[in-house]
Amino acid sequence: MATLKGIYVLAVLISRDKTVEIGSLGSVSFPRGMYAYVGSAQKNLEKRLKRHVEKTAKRKFWHIDYLLAENSTKVVKIYFKEVGKAEECFTAQTLAKFGFPVEGFGCSDCQCESHLFLFGGLSQMEDVCLKLGFKPFPLSCQRVAALGNI
Image (cartoon, rainbow, N blue to C red; front, side, top):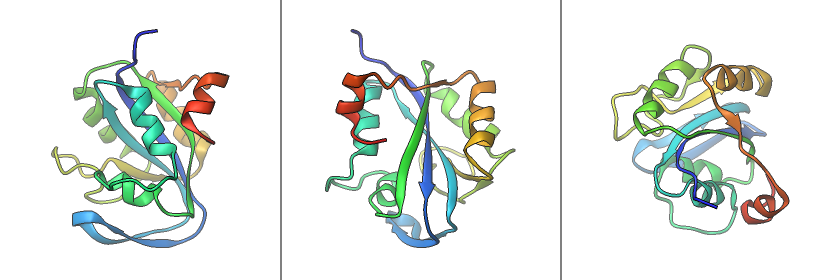
């Protein structure tokens, strides 16, 4: 099977109010809730998603790595779209119309306000993703084993 590439939206549940040191952003406070994180993987989408959902120790490279390393966070669903990197910022700008942006998060390489958004719940976020043409990431038995517990 050919490797997938494109952009993705992680549905991230933060189970309690939390303040986290996020690399160069410094200390960021996150109210508990459902967040949407927009990212891109133009070489190997499955490898990137596996990296995001694994709770093993790893080098923190992206802002999202710092947040997902916390015990109170969990990726609960993944959406993806096989498109070019330019669509990543369009998606972030669209999500900003429906969710509350975490200023400066995940957008150090672009002009977006954020790539992480607090939503009222999973169904609201899923509606926006589906309207933008995203598909739920297929979680076959093999992929579930490869990605870990989602």
